[in-house]
Amino acid sequence: MEVKAGIPVHVALVVQDVERAVRFYRDVLGMVEVKQVSVPDDKAQRGRFSRCGFDFRTFFLGPLAVKLVSVKTQPPAAAGGVDAFTGFRYLGLVVDDLDQTVDRLRAAGVEFLSEVLPPEPEHNVGRLVFFHDPEGNLIELYGV
Image (tube, rainbow, N blue to C red; front, top):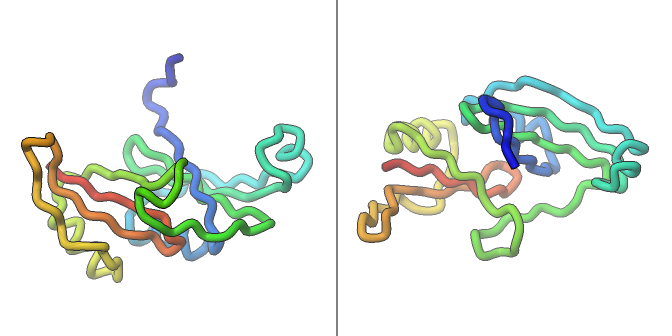
C-alpha cells in the first residue's frame, strides 16, 4: 500500500462540543481549518461506518489533519490514559521548541498532566509531556 505524498495524515476525533473543540484546535494549537462536511444518514448507513449521519471539520497542522467529528447520537466521552482501552489513545505532536510550546499553551489555559519529563537517551526517548484537549482526548508534545 502507498499513500499519496504531500497529503496530511488524517486522524478523526469524535467530540461532544464541536465549537469548544474548534476553539482549542484552531485558537490554542494553531491548526488551520480547511473543510466542513456533513455526511447524511443514508450515506453513513450505506457505507456501514455509522448508524447516523455526522458533521466534521478538518484542520491541518503540517503533515497532520485532525477531523473533529460531531455525531448526532453523542457517544460518551473517553477520557483516560494510554492504558484506558485499545484503539486510538493519543495524538503525538513533535515540536521544535518544547519549552516555548508548553509556555504558550499554559498561558492559554492548558493544564498539563505533569511537568516536562526529561529525556531517556538509553531508551531513545526525548523530552515529553501530555495534556487533554477540552473533550478529554490525550495529546503528547514531544521534543528532542
